[in-house]
Length: 252
Ligand SMILES: [Fe+2]
Image (cartoon, rainbow, N blue to C red; front, top):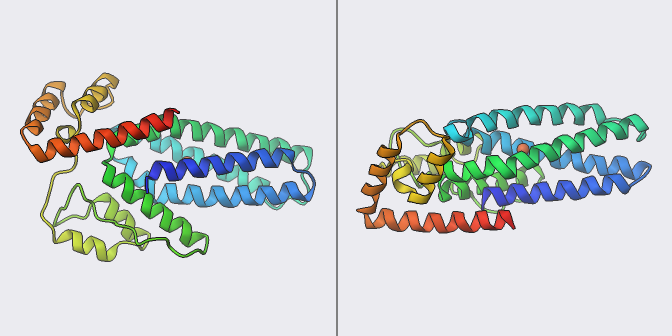
């Protein structure tokens, strides 16, 4: 499951509930608010425990991720202040409007900036694994059957000594201890670098000046190196196609 598609579906559902909140009246308005609160609590929980930890380290997503945590805190404060109301007074409705504006701002920043940069920072396999972990955690929080055992292996880095971030996150939320042990027995491989990304992606990162970790020359040399590997070339091509498809879909 694509992590970003899962989160975008959550965003859409919450937007629909906010529309409903505006048209509802009386007790119905408070009932709709409870649904919004529940959706946002689960959504922020899976982002903070699963997605954001994977995005804190990459340089291109570091700052936006820290900002996202802070925006969540503002939303949580507003949710707490709105909870427990016995009626939807004018003041309550004004605060609910501010909540919606904050959520919309946060969603816009995630969908237009953070997810795009995260798409560059993570491999397709990592994005799928994070999506499966978030779906499983959402189901667990909602008291539903976990849809599928999440594949928590870091397919891009089969390191023997240290489990990767996906395995660590899976272990942290209780979904990955056995799989991380299996992964530890496998042969090590490098984390995705510019060498395994398409030249187009490397060029994009250079233009955006989001990474100072390597010079354009070094990146170019690594990219050339990857071209000599048929497997790497195939992997890079497949990833580029997948990501292009995703980005086209997000623009539509
Ligand atoms: Fe968020």
